[in-house]
Amino acid sequence: MTNHLAGPVLVLLDHAPDGTLRAPVLELLTLGRGIGAVHGVWLGADGPGGDVLAQLGAQGVEAVDALDLGDADQRLSPVVADALADLAAALGAAALLLTSTFDNKEIAGRLGVRSGAGVVVDASDARVVDGRVVADKTVLAGTWTTSCAVRTPFAVVALKANSTQPTPAAAPTSPAVVTHPVAISGAARQAVVVEHAERAPSDRPALGEAQVVVVGGRGTNGDFTPLEELADVLGGAAGATRVAPDEGWIGHDAQIGQTGVTIAPRLYIGAGVSGAVHHRGGMQASGTIVAVNSDPESPIFEIADLGIVGDLFTVLPQATQELRRLKDAQG
Image (cartoon, rainbow, N blue to C red; front, top):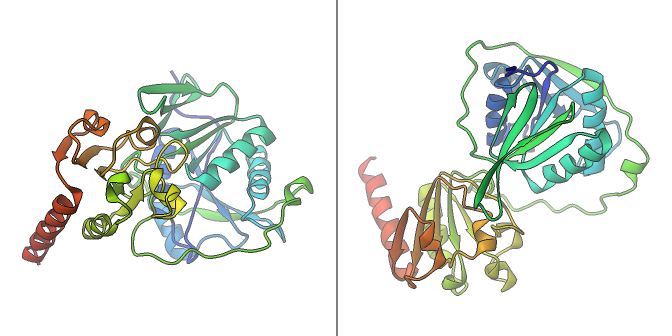
């Protein structure tokens, strides 16, 4: 049995506008080391700064491949897919790992078409069995866990955040930055971004990356204040079931479920959430599930590790108050 790939494993280095790596990238680097020699992929000819290079070295990255896209717009998924396909072919890469975001899943699909790769999205693990990449993922609203073997020479796997615990490499490296000029096809340039609005900055972590998520459903009646206060004291994110954005109570980017964001936090707290199957499909991989609902027959209690039958407008403020007291006591 071979547990390492012959070709390099590419890891797309998602980063914030200031150049810092997003937290789930460290998980990808940890998993990548277990299946092959890791190359970080940076969009932009200049590559990462010195602090990020040191961070990548601590993760055992052997090289950083900076993609020079010229005048092409890296916000367009066809452009990124073109660039990644050319890089993978040039390096003889065996796999590409990327975080399972909306944008990256579109890139993964286009890359699969462009390169003939086998693609798995929303995976929770990746490993090598008999020379092939095998990715685990839940299907059918979280009721089944599957292992998907990629049978093509090049595998593309998009992994959910919080799938693994990041750990530094046993032997740190000093990765060099290698710039690769990439010719983007005319087909990839057919779409043009005509307007771009930056999301308002927030102190909360991104919903798909948060280790703690507090979620509200119909039982909130549109008042998410108790959920947001609890999320803030826990250092987590606030999310919602489909009814909330449909009613205009919260933005659609907060929706969790089969048609929204898929999450796998270490702690999920659902308040006024019934636990419909389309929502469960997006959160059932959570580590610990806490449910607060006034209806003891709510389906969410079937999968909850801790169920509280009560009014969320009573339970959540009490929990928030006690957590603040404990934090103050600890200084």
